[in-house]
Length: 149
Image (cartoon, rainbow, N blue to C red; front, side):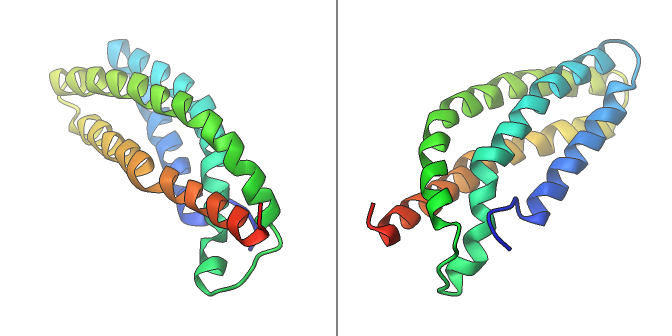
């Protein structure tokens, strides 16, 4: 499989993009807020996929006890991820603020699907910070350990 973003995580990002596209088409403040979120999310998701999610593509091989050829890449990427995490977490904070605004606007406009989307996105960010980012860092640490770096 190699060091590629796992399909489940990639499809999750695609679903987020599609939901934001629908919300961005809404008129008024709701659509404007969704477009602001989409602008932030574009660069954010690119960074996540490049630095945090690709190492997770090695997890199945590592769990089987295999030594993927991409371990050297994972060890190098670990350093980049450490540098990027503060920015990615700050982007989560900015996105969360906008999501709370989106939820209020959606509530006021009687559009519960966007309230639910905002709530799901807030949980998504916590999962990334609490599970996915640390798991990616562990892959990098493990890669460095195995290589004797």
